[in-house]
Amino acid sequence: MSDYTQMWSSLGLDLKGHDALLSVLGGAYTDIFLSQKNRPEGMKYFDFVMSEVHGLRIKELMDAKAAGRTVIGSYCVFVPEELIIAVDGVSVGLCAGAEFNFEGAEEVLPRNTCSLIKSAFGFKLGKVCPYLEASDVVVGENTCDGKKKSYEMLKPLVKDLYVMDLPQMKSESGRAMLKEEYRKFAVKLEKASGKKITAESLKKGIDIVNAKRKAVKRLTELRSADPAPISGLDALLINQVFFYDDPVRFTESVNKLCDELEERVKKGIGVFPKGTTRLVVSGCPMAVPNWKLPWIIETSSAVIVGEESCVGERGARWMTDTKGKTVDDLIDMLTERYFQIDCAVFTPNPSRVEYVKEMKKKLNAKGIVHYSLQFCQPYIMESGPVEKELEKSGMPTLRLETDYSQEDAGQLKTRIEAFIERLNK
Ligand code: BJ8
Image 1 (tube, helix red, strand yellow):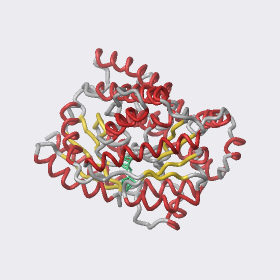
Image 2: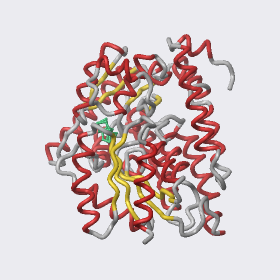
Image 3: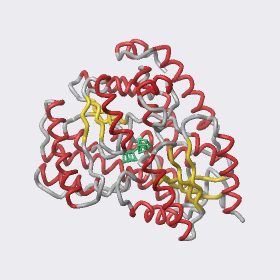
Image 4: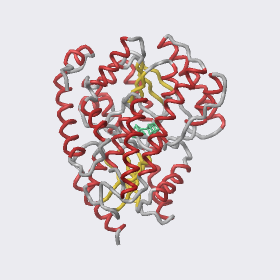
């Protein structure tokens, strides 16, 4: 990696803390990803992206800003990238997946806050996230209580925090509210960027994001083969890079990888032997570098073939229709698309478990691992009924609760191995 010290200093990063974070990240990446056998060649692109995730990609963001483009950071798949692209902006995900500076985070947040939120605060207070520091606008959203209230604490720490209100019920008034919020967000983006959203620019945004989602969908479908042509770890990584990379380049790289995977499927080449126990993971999103659970699973003689998560199917499975002549028509289409997201913050939320069932069948999985972050009320609350319903439908389910620490790794491994044994009896 080139020397980006100057750029990181200009963003106000704490260089010592940042170096420490990068060295942990680099070490984990080598141990977890580069040690895998039979990886597709196409993963080299994603290895490169990860090696430059705080380098070249940040330089691209800085160049974009210098050219007059606006960088918008966000924490949720309800924030439409299509609208950001419509003002020629750059969308970046800000969710963090590392246990960094939790002591600092716990000075402003209750200890019983989920790791995802604590990590975002730890990164902000420790000044180690160049994506956050490069963002002209940070978008929060009213989803779970933890996020909703923590944005109040985040507001004085960032230059421009915009909070989007979101419905919690799939009702007609909920739909109308979502549309209104997207309208307001469009106005905010126009103000922040100084650019007008037109039907053409929004349609372009929709096309770019649809293409990106289609590529990920193609990848998902290829994972139904046995042997699986790609590991769950690598597929998760692609779903994580989805939130950082240039969308057009990302789409091309995923499609290129899928061409290779198609060949692998034809030839019966896989990362693990045919017949390896296949699992679907469902639950909370896993942000970079939260690779603990998939790593444990895939070093326990099983392969993950699908993720029912916002960093996975829930983030990418629906497309947006482009019918409509006006910006308002297209915002209607966006609303239709995003209103389908079955996050556990919705009540009731029956479509989520139905989709887990569908995924299990489509992907020929043997069982489901339900993953919740500790203190995540929406997903933990939903995990009981989800497990019950899946087991009732003859789908073995393992319910896990964990955090970003490594302390429970041994215990998780024991439970996962016992679950795999149960599946193979
Ligand atoms: S649409 S899943 S990205 S809100 S883990 S912070 S829920 S306490 S992340 Fe999410 Fe949007 Fe929903 Fe998806 Fe709260 Fe739970 Fe923490 Fe979570």
